[in-house]
Length: 264
Image 1: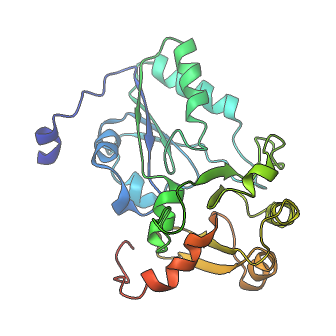
Image 2 (image 1 turned 120 degrees about the vertical axis):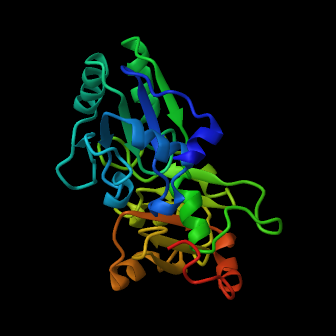
Protein backbone atom coordinates (compact mmCIF):
# COMPACT_ATOMS: atom_id res chain seq x y z
CA UNK A 1 0.00 0.00 0.00
CA UNK A 2 1.27 3.46 -0.92
CA UNK A 3 0.63 4.84 2.57
CA UNK A 4 3.10 2.33 4.03
CA UNK A 5 5.83 3.66 1.76
CA UNK A 6 5.05 7.23 2.75
CA UNK A 7 5.33 6.38 6.44
CA UNK A 8 8.61 4.50 5.98
CA UNK A 9 7.51 1.69 8.25
CA UNK A 10 10.22 -0.71 9.48
CA UNK A 11 11.01 -4.09 7.97
CA UNK A 12 9.33 -7.05 9.67
CA UNK A 13 12.31 -9.40 9.79
CA UNK A 14 12.27 -13.19 9.95
CA UNK A 15 12.52 -14.47 13.51
CA UNK A 16 11.02 -11.33 15.04
CA UNK A 17 7.89 -11.13 17.18
CA UNK A 18 5.61 -8.10 17.02
CA UNK A 19 3.10 -7.63 19.85
CA UNK A 20 0.22 -5.73 18.28
CA UNK A 21 -2.87 -4.08 19.72
CA UNK A 22 -5.99 -4.73 17.64
CA UNK A 23 -7.96 -1.92 19.27
CA UNK A 24 -11.36 -2.08 20.97
CA UNK A 25 -13.14 -4.13 18.30
CA UNK A 26 -14.22 -2.18 15.24
CA UNK A 27 -11.88 -2.92 12.35
CA UNK A 28 -11.83 0.76 11.39
CA UNK A 29 -10.06 1.55 14.66
CA UNK A 30 -6.97 -0.47 13.77
CA UNK A 31 -3.83 1.63 13.55
CA UNK A 32 -2.01 1.88 10.23
CA UNK A 33 0.98 0.20 11.85
CA UNK A 34 -1.23 -2.75 12.91
CA UNK A 35 -2.59 -3.17 9.37
CA UNK A 36 0.96 -3.12 8.02
CA UNK A 37 2.08 -5.75 10.54
CA UNK A 38 -0.86 -7.99 9.63
CA UNK A 39 0.04 -7.76 5.95
CA UNK A 40 3.63 -8.86 6.58
CA UNK A 41 3.35 -11.58 9.24
CA UNK A 42 3.92 -15.27 8.48
CA UNK A 43 2.20 -16.44 11.67
CA UNK A 44 -0.56 -14.57 13.50
CA UNK A 45 -1.40 -15.78 17.01
CA UNK A 46 -4.60 -14.00 17.92
CA UNK A 47 -6.92 -13.59 20.89
CA UNK A 48 -10.65 -14.22 21.32
CA UNK A 49 -11.71 -10.61 20.80
CA UNK A 50 -10.01 -10.25 17.41
CA UNK A 51 -12.64 -10.31 14.66
CA UNK A 52 -12.57 -12.02 11.27
CA UNK A 53 -12.70 -8.57 9.64
CA UNK A 54 -9.39 -7.69 11.28
CA UNK A 55 -7.78 -10.97 10.23
CA UNK A 56 -8.68 -10.25 6.58
CA UNK A 57 -5.67 -7.92 6.48
CA UNK A 58 -3.37 -10.94 6.82
CA UNK A 59 -1.56 -12.09 3.70
CA UNK A 60 -3.09 -15.07 1.93
CA UNK A 61 -0.51 -17.63 3.05
CA UNK A 62 -0.28 -16.49 6.68
CA UNK A 63 -0.85 -19.14 9.34
CA UNK A 64 -3.64 -18.07 11.71
CA UNK A 65 -3.40 -19.56 15.21
CA UNK A 66 -6.28 -19.02 17.63
CA UNK A 67 -5.14 -18.53 21.23
CA UNK A 68 -8.21 -17.05 22.85
CA UNK A 69 -8.87 -16.98 26.58
CA UNK A 70 -12.43 -16.34 27.78
CA UNK A 71 -13.64 -16.48 31.38
CA UNK A 72 -15.68 -19.57 32.22
CA UNK A 73 -14.83 -21.30 28.94
CA UNK A 74 -12.08 -23.74 27.91
CA UNK A 75 -9.06 -21.54 27.24
CA UNK A 76 -5.50 -21.77 26.07
CA UNK A 77 -2.88 -21.86 28.79
CA UNK A 78 -0.61 -18.81 28.83
CA UNK A 79 2.48 -20.99 29.13
CA UNK A 80 1.50 -22.92 25.99
CA UNK A 81 0.82 -19.67 24.11
CA UNK A 82 4.26 -18.38 25.02
CA UNK A 83 5.85 -21.64 23.86
CA UNK A 84 4.07 -21.31 20.51
CA UNK A 85 5.34 -17.76 20.05
CA UNK A 86 8.92 -18.80 20.86
CA UNK A 87 8.84 -21.87 18.62
CA UNK A 88 7.50 -20.07 15.56
CA UNK A 89 10.07 -17.28 16.02
CA UNK A 90 12.95 -19.74 16.41
CA UNK A 91 11.77 -21.46 13.23
CA UNK A 92 12.43 -18.19 11.42
CA UNK A 93 8.88 -16.93 10.98
CA UNK A 94 7.66 -13.36 11.29
CA UNK A 95 5.36 -13.79 14.29
CA UNK A 96 2.55 -11.39 15.09
CA UNK A 97 0.95 -11.72 18.52
CA UNK A 98 -2.41 -9.97 18.08
CA UNK A 99 -4.30 -8.81 21.16
CA UNK A 100 -7.54 -6.91 21.65
CA UNK A 101 -7.09 -3.35 22.88
CA UNK A 102 -3.48 -2.57 23.76
CA UNK A 103 -0.85 -5.29 24.38
CA UNK A 104 0.28 -3.76 27.67
CA UNK A 105 -3.09 -3.13 29.35
CA UNK A 106 -4.52 -6.24 31.00
CA UNK A 107 -3.39 -8.30 28.01
CA UNK A 108 -0.33 -10.09 29.44
CA UNK A 109 1.90 -8.43 26.88
CA UNK A 110 4.55 -7.72 29.49
CA UNK A 111 4.72 -11.39 30.47
CA UNK A 112 5.26 -12.40 26.86
CA UNK A 113 7.90 -9.68 26.45
CA UNK A 114 9.85 -11.02 29.44
CA UNK A 115 9.80 -14.51 27.91
CA UNK A 116 10.97 -13.14 24.57
CA UNK A 117 13.87 -11.47 26.37
CA UNK A 118 14.73 -14.71 28.15
CA UNK A 119 14.93 -16.44 24.77
CA UNK A 120 16.92 -13.62 23.15
CA UNK A 121 14.20 -12.97 20.55
CA UNK A 122 13.86 -9.48 19.10
CA UNK A 123 10.42 -7.99 19.41
CA UNK A 124 8.44 -4.82 18.85
CA UNK A 125 5.33 -3.50 20.64
CA UNK A 126 2.70 -1.72 18.52
CA UNK A 127 0.16 0.06 20.74
CA UNK A 128 -3.56 -0.12 20.08
CA UNK A 129 -6.54 1.95 21.16
CA UNK A 130 -7.43 0.50 24.54
CA UNK A 131 -10.74 -1.30 24.96
CA UNK A 132 -11.67 1.00 27.83
CA UNK A 133 -10.85 4.38 26.31
CA UNK A 134 -12.14 3.41 22.87
CA UNK A 135 -15.26 1.82 24.31
CA UNK A 136 -16.05 4.81 26.49
CA UNK A 137 -15.63 7.22 23.59
CA UNK A 138 -17.88 5.05 21.42
CA UNK A 139 -20.53 5.16 24.15
CA UNK A 140 -20.21 8.97 24.53
CA UNK A 141 -18.67 8.68 27.99
CA UNK A 142 -15.50 10.74 28.37
CA UNK A 143 -12.66 9.32 30.44
CA UNK A 144 -12.06 12.77 31.89
CA UNK A 145 -13.90 16.06 31.92
CA UNK A 146 -12.74 19.32 33.39
CA UNK A 147 -15.69 19.64 35.75
CA UNK A 148 -15.89 16.02 36.91
CA UNK A 149 -12.50 14.41 37.46
CA UNK A 150 -8.77 14.98 37.36
CA UNK A 151 -7.91 11.33 37.90
CA UNK A 152 -9.05 7.91 36.68
CA UNK A 153 -8.33 4.35 37.76
CA UNK A 154 -8.22 1.20 35.64
CA UNK A 155 -8.54 -2.20 37.29
CA UNK A 156 -9.32 -5.79 36.39
CA UNK A 157 -12.27 -7.61 37.90
CA UNK A 158 -10.52 -10.97 38.11
CA UNK A 159 -7.06 -12.43 38.49
CA UNK A 160 -5.30 -15.06 36.36
CA UNK A 161 -7.38 -17.78 38.02
CA UNK A 162 -10.68 -16.02 37.32
CA UNK A 163 -11.16 -15.10 40.97
CA UNK A 164 -11.53 -11.70 42.61
CA UNK A 165 -8.17 -9.93 42.78
CA UNK A 166 -6.82 -10.01 46.33
CA UNK A 167 -4.32 -7.18 45.92
CA UNK A 168 -6.75 -4.29 45.39
CA UNK A 169 -7.24 -1.69 48.12
CA UNK A 170 -11.01 -1.23 47.80
CA UNK A 171 -11.04 1.51 50.42
CA UNK A 172 -8.72 3.55 48.20
CA UNK A 173 -10.63 2.62 45.03
CA UNK A 174 -13.87 3.89 46.56
CA UNK A 175 -12.35 7.38 46.72
CA UNK A 176 -11.23 7.58 43.06
CA UNK A 177 -13.64 9.80 41.04
CA UNK A 178 -13.79 7.55 37.97
CA UNK A 179 -13.11 3.81 38.03
CA UNK A 180 -12.96 1.74 34.85
CA UNK A 181 -13.13 -2.04 35.21
CA UNK A 182 -12.04 -4.70 32.75
CA UNK A 183 -13.45 -8.24 32.96
CA UNK A 184 -15.62 -7.33 35.93
CA UNK A 185 -19.10 -8.63 35.05
CA UNK A 186 -18.73 -11.94 36.89
CA UNK A 187 -17.66 -10.37 40.18
CA UNK A 188 -19.53 -7.06 39.91
CA UNK A 189 -22.07 -7.98 42.64
CA UNK A 190 -19.20 -8.41 45.12
CA UNK A 191 -17.33 -5.36 43.82
CA UNK A 192 -20.41 -3.12 44.11
CA UNK A 193 -21.11 -4.27 47.67
CA UNK A 194 -17.49 -3.77 48.64
CA UNK A 195 -17.35 -0.25 47.21
CA UNK A 196 -20.56 0.76 48.98
CA UNK A 197 -19.20 -0.70 52.22
CA UNK A 198 -16.05 1.40 51.79
CA UNK A 199 -18.07 4.60 51.40
CA UNK A 200 -18.92 4.89 47.71
CA UNK A 201 -22.42 6.40 47.34
CA UNK A 202 -24.93 3.72 46.37
CA UNK A 203 -26.53 6.10 43.85
CA UNK A 204 -23.25 6.81 42.06
CA UNK A 205 -23.65 6.55 38.28
CA UNK A 206 -22.35 3.43 36.55
CA UNK A 207 -22.41 2.20 32.96
CA UNK A 208 -21.71 -1.16 31.36
CA UNK A 209 -20.60 -1.13 27.71
CA UNK A 210 -21.05 -4.48 26.00
CA UNK A 211 -19.33 -5.21 22.66
CA UNK A 212 -17.80 -1.75 22.64
CA UNK A 213 -17.45 -0.08 19.18
CA UNK A 214 -19.16 -2.97 17.37
CA UNK A 215 -22.56 -2.93 15.69
CA UNK A 216 -23.82 -5.04 18.59
CA UNK A 217 -22.70 -2.44 21.16
CA UNK A 218 -25.09 -1.96 24.07
CA UNK A 219 -24.81 0.60 26.86
CA UNK A 220 -26.59 0.11 30.17
CA UNK A 221 -26.74 3.02 32.63
CA UNK A 222 -27.68 2.49 36.24
CA UNK A 223 -26.39 3.19 39.74
CA UNK A 224 -24.11 1.21 42.01
CA UNK A 225 -26.96 -0.23 44.06
CA UNK A 226 -29.11 -1.37 41.12
CA UNK A 227 -26.50 -2.28 38.52
CA UNK A 228 -26.47 -6.03 39.05
CA UNK A 229 -30.24 -6.47 38.90
CA UNK A 230 -30.28 -4.24 35.80
CA UNK A 231 -27.55 -6.35 34.17
CA UNK A 232 -29.62 -9.47 34.77
CA UNK A 233 -32.83 -7.81 33.59
CA UNK A 234 -31.20 -6.56 30.37
CA UNK A 235 -29.13 -9.72 29.83
CA UNK A 236 -25.86 -7.87 29.51
CA UNK A 237 -22.97 -10.23 28.83
CA UNK A 238 -19.20 -10.16 28.58
CA UNK A 239 -17.13 -8.81 26.96
CA UNK A 240 -17.97 -5.54 28.62
CA UNK A 241 -16.33 -2.49 30.16
CA UNK A 242 -17.70 -1.09 33.43
CA UNK A 243 -17.41 2.64 34.13
CA UNK A 244 -18.17 4.09 37.57
CA UNK A 245 -18.33 7.80 38.33
CA UNK A 246 -19.82 11.14 37.43
CA UNK A 247 -18.57 11.04 33.82
CA UNK A 248 -21.35 8.53 33.14
CA UNK A 249 -23.88 11.28 33.84
CA UNK A 250 -22.46 13.33 30.96
CA UNK A 251 -23.55 10.77 28.38
CA UNK A 252 -27.15 11.96 28.09
CA UNK A 253 -25.95 15.41 27.03
CA UNK A 254 -23.03 14.35 24.87
CA UNK A 255 -25.00 11.80 22.88
CA UNK A 256 -27.63 14.27 21.63
CA UNK A 257 -25.97 15.14 18.31
CA UNK A 258 -23.57 12.25 17.91
CA UNK A 259 -23.63 10.78 14.41
CA UNK A 260 -25.18 7.37 15.01
CA UNK A 261 -22.69 5.50 12.85
CA UNK A 262 -19.73 7.64 13.93
CA UNK A 263 -17.71 4.49 14.54
CA UNK A 264 -19.77 1.45 13.70
